Image (cartoon, rainbow, N blue to C red; front, side, top):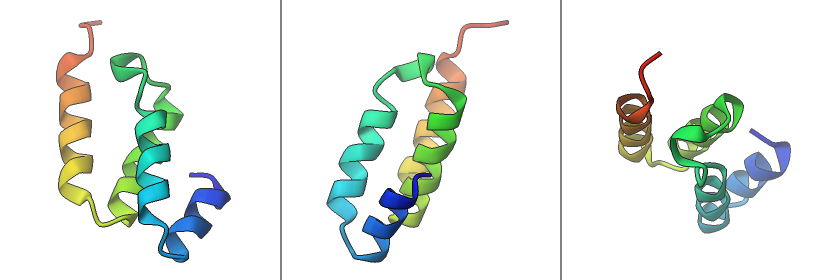
Length: 66
């Protein structure tokens, strides 16, 4: 995750980080794997572990079969 967002979390700006995280996830199942990783990390650091698990699970379930 970007250092900027990590600093925002350290400063208690959870709302800003969650909005930016939603932006990272806006591509849905077409999300860049690096962005997905960053988003899941940020969600967990922001205390949203259940949401992170849900996003990860739904992304895996909605991926087209290879």
